[in-house]
Image (cartoon, rainbow, N blue to C red; front, side):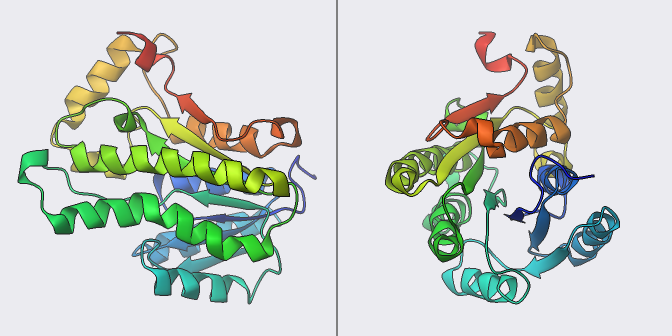
Length: 251
């Protein structure tokens, strides 16, 4: 069956696991062919592509580090072997260091900023020649862009930079019919959350203070990305859509 995004081509960075995997699956179910970017999750990326092909979609796994210009060039060179256009770019891949801000170094700063914020600009620059009126660029952020969280200082700063950059890109690319938005997610229990020393506390606090329910899933975040890709979202541009069940309004 043809979905609402039938015939579109999407590139999802960090697409092999967690939220990225859920986004790739959602877009494929809606009709998209999908390029799944990964860094060190080759088996997971290939397994996902097998699942997406079973839906009748074209799917290809592409290795690369999104914060390194030469690597992004390689990603798009490989992408170009399979697809001649790009309708949906999802900048989801992220990394960082979980330490008190006063213990951070310049190396840590560059790591966070280059992977989480600069990547959006690098990816968009490379994608533009493949994009036409109606294309979408969507970046994934987190509540740490606006809220202070223990050990999250540099990552939060990089996510705030990401959101500011997305607004600038939205202004620049809007006249070309390309919409740029951000989805900012609350606490989702993915593999990445296992690296947080206060994981259980984060989950418990989120569950206690979220009006819409105690659990936020990767699928919930993917659904929000999907909504921004629909033609009906054509006048949503430069916006950060918070998907947290109401956690951030609860004091």
